[in-house]
Image (cartoon, rainbow, N blue to C red):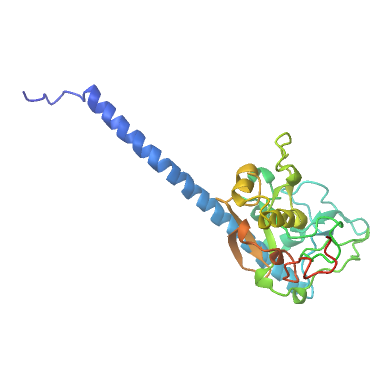
Amino acid sequence: MLRRKDQGFTLIELLVVIAIIAILAAILFPVFAQAREKARAISCLSNVKQMGTASMMYAQDYDESLVFAGNRFAHQNDSCFNGNSNYNANNRAWVDWEIPLLAYTKNSQIFICPDKREFGCFGYAMNVDSSNDDFPGSPSPPGAWGSATSTGGAVVGPVTLAAVVAPAECLFIYDSHDEQLENLFSPSIVGDNVPDTEAWETMDSWLQALKAGLTNETTLINNFKAGPWRHSGMLNICWLDGHAKAKKFSSLEQKNLDIENINYTISTDPLWPE
């Protein structure tokens, strides 16, 4: 018997169509999510590339010296950065490395990582010694803290481009991370999502633990989502020659974190603690 022209779909036909749509959605949604994440990663890589360009411009203006990781810089207020950004001739505020680069970027939004917008303008970190408790003879990161007076006179000299042995292999600016890294393997303590914009020691500690087999990259990624490997297991890096490239954390060497380009061990450094 012929179907009437005004007859609608049967229930079975509707269920089949719905099932097909559901299957297609299940297949395509993860693909769309991956595409969005890839777009965010590319945008982030563009950010660090612009920071690298700004850093090189800064260095050319200051006798090929790298921007201080922190100092009493003369600067203007910027709404993206919290904290005291006011200064005057006699009492300049202490600020991090992003502020002096603003004169070259003209855009504070590049300091916001698309995958960690909750970090605000502290989405990226500089490879810099985070304290003074390194072992004797330890490698020197490219970022240096300027011990400045109230009028802005730096006591500690900056790192010069000429001091860097292998600029294309020296990590400079990268994705920042939660500052409570020491709590990584403690299930009772949760990181507070406060971004750390300088962390040579913690990066080195992670790396040495990974190379020694004390942990593995999968464990790091799965247990510490706020780590620098947030772009599908990759971290975006601006290297000291100005080029930007994403790498797996496990592919780094200790020599990539210091200007000497050396993997320090007891055999290469007599001051290495036993």
